[in-house]
Image 1 (cartoon, helix red, strand yellow):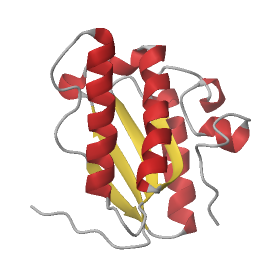
Image 2: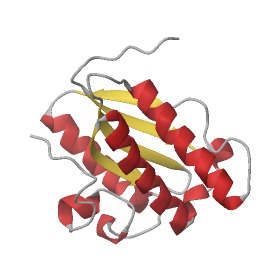
Image 3: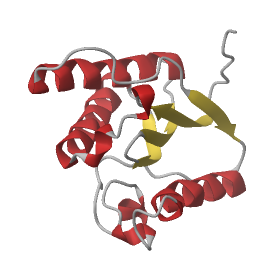
Length: 155
């Protein structure tokens, strides 16, 4: 089934690793994925309002630019990460499930609710007792001092 996207809508995207492998238990993999976000933001000019990197999946809140859509963004982000990760680690094959999940965000209340859900994901998974203790999350931007150049401001 073909996806339908609306211009000017922020999307909550979820992508899962192949066979739910815990790829992102590795700090270097998380740091590299963040670098891929930075690079793809520069290339595709999308806005990133939130993210979390869990051991076997990611969530991100993205507003595509006028020149790209979510499919292009996800293809480039996942492909760029997988190619370079496999090259660095002398591995091969898919790292991600083919598909991803997307939901359009409709207004400020849903945006805040979705950010809270994303930021509390590691707490629900039993990885930490508070979202502030999880390093690879935009929580650090909203309530700390990290990821200042990565996360965009929204109003």
